[in-house]
Length: 338
Ligand SMILES: Cc1cc2nc3c(=O)[nH]c(=O)nc-3n(C[C@H](O)[C@H](O)[C@H](O)COP(=O)(O)OP(=O)(O)OC[C@H]3O[C@@H](n4cnc5c(N)ncnc54)[C@H](O)[C@@H]3O)c2cc1C
Image 1: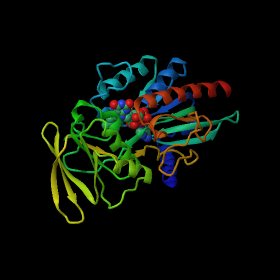
Image 2: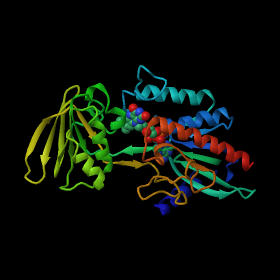
Image 3: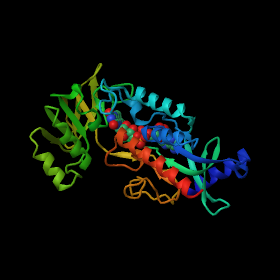
Image 4: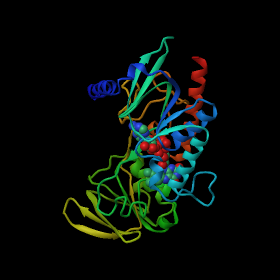
């Protein structure tokens, strides 16, 4: 992986022929295009740090895939994900953020004249030198390839990957919903759904759960929850909205169609952090490790905000909150190392 990154840098240096000649050093480069990145950009731009923001190929981030946001303060009538992200982007640009729609493929470290670490952020077509970096590249909810659940099918029309975000929507209230997964988060999400749904089926492909004992017993003791072991969802059905799922029992190879208004993937998330240098420490699932109560990573001048480090809360408002922290911490770092 790192050998590959090295080759990419070398190729970029030769191709552009300007890597060692980068004259200008930016104050701050923000990587990401979701709520964390845009909040960091708004704060950094208002502090006259003149940020550059690489929004990546999935501009707007995870919220782009959702239609109803009822829990972001300031929008009592609810707002769609794309509309909210459009507003955030507009606000970043209003204060002068320079937005580039490219993915960052690597970050290189080198020493400045004064002994401070500087960074060069590379995309496939450009390189920019900077004193600080905010990593706000988020995470991707894992989904399996089940017919009927795709983006142009029933995704967002009964099929979701975020119970906290979508579970209380009217379309799931007093209805039967299905949750795919067998770990702690699947149990937690199923338990959360019991507040709204009439029944919650957990579909798990193995004959034992991976969840901790305590979470298993909470789920098993909830009278609204039923666990379908050794089973997989093989198809989601519905015209405008999900109305049924087909479940296959892997032990006896029988299938059954169940009426369902909701289908939630609860099989984890993958943080978008593979492109980061190895000096930025991550946990064994790839989440960036930050100092407690801070957005500081293990590299001076590199901060991390949003779902790229937060595997617990994973909400737009918490991502925005840590985006604000990252920009303020970067500003302070720039001040202290001037
Ligand atoms: C279906 C769904 C519905 C949701 N509904 C709600 C809700 O109602 N309320 C709520 O609070 N939360 C909701 N969430 C959760 C919320 O979307 C996330 O917590 C939030 O978007 C995280 O923000 P983020 O900025 O950390 O990252 P993300 O939103 O994941 O954005 C990451 C950004 O980083 C960019 N990126 C990634 N890699 C690179 C790279 N190498 N170079 C450059 N850019 C890169 C991507 O292009 C993307 O723009 C929902 C999530 C899902 C999946």
